[in-house]
Image (cartoon, rainbow, N blue to C red):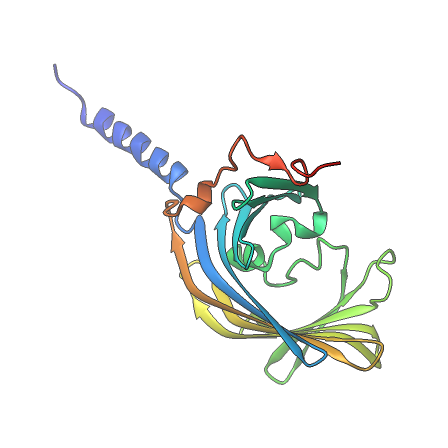
Length: 241
């Protein structure tokens, strides 16, 4: 039986389209995150292994702490926190912790022109150039108390600085994005420094370092498909009432 050349081509096209559907380049991003918080002369550090599934928009974080735990968040802000040591699980929902409001989501999807400000209700009111820097100014929504505007500064199209203001003379927070690295589909700052100014005149410094960034078309780590055991008990269920 003879098979036409066009039929063969069509068959391989179907196979190719199917493989692209289930293995999109860069759909799975893993990295190590080291965070240091300096407040009142004390430093608190934590280390997290982060796994971002850009198809399902889920983020799984494995926390290296005295009590190890795994946190899974989705686009709806549904959070599951699992403690393997006690086989307990906690549930909550916070829109602020949605996977779509994480910096990894914005950078991986090249949504760097506002880094989530638009989703939070901020409106762009001006855009100008200051020397080689492109500067945008965003006005906060009326329901957001305490913040008046956010200033963003870009260099070569990438955000390098953000400034949250209560008014023109009072700065609430400064964020610096540095050490950018290319990952084919996107660019990611490997160092982020955030300075929050307190009413007392003190400040809180938060430094985040990313390392060992891997981008793959396949889920090559168990945490991309992490499943909480079915027999996990709600937190506190084992405690006597």
